[in-house]
Length: 349
Ligand SMILES: [Zn+2]
Image (cartoon, rainbow, N blue to C red; front, side):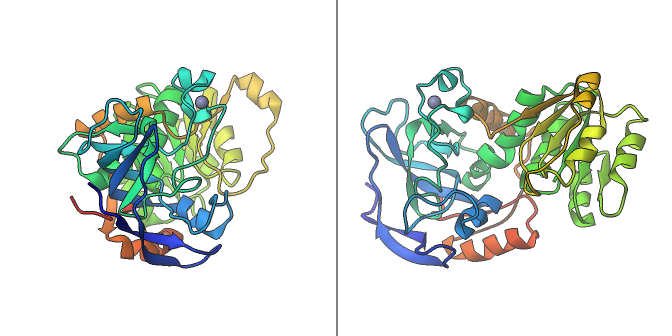
């Protein structure tokens, strides 16, 4: 049986400090599972929620943390296929499981979208959390829980974007902006795994060196090198077959113009603003495709688990530490010094 009380890092006021506290261990309701947290990654989204620039937590005090893996500790009623002791990774979104999109395996665009784990329900900066059973997928015994915690976001997000939404093919030339971040470094691996030639775009030579080490054949800092000319040179004037956009309007006009005829841009993130001007004539004359992509489905996450288990994608973790490291890990995100992900390990397994 799980203990009656657990340790958690609480936000008690908007933009307030992370408070190391002991609180009652939650109990799973029907359809839910209590997970002992063996890994919870820290990323930019956590910092944004804490600062209140994104959706507010539904109530205070709140527990952050949405990239989670752990061990099933107890199970609510109406849950099939899971047992106490199972090792699991969790998807991020709260979805209905019943709408037309959920029924087609596209639950990331659920009609009754309920928000995020760690935003709209308490997250993984704690020894235990309760999540809907439909969010959980099993992971193999030899995959570490810290590594498993980053599968659904840092790896699942670019998997869905590049493989499912873009449909990358062997030999394609793929430009990835924000390539040095946690999602970007795994996006490079997925592009290379799929047989694409990858150009990494990001700020700073340290990030670009990591990008090259992971197989990017070109790496460009657009503050030092003209990005449009670099794409033109790299593609022999043809243009890129695909662009994965993790940055937004700061790079989008250049990367869109850098597409080959018939090229595809997939937009996963935009932290550099909202406004962007497109000439529709450029889009139709070139038959460009501009698509959105949002995280990963539970079904696709199973494939991601398999790819990592087979060694085809390497989860990149920088530092791990106990809950007391949450503040420092968030600061490292703000400072941009993390390579891959830092992961909290609330309970060691
Ligand atoms: Zn739904």
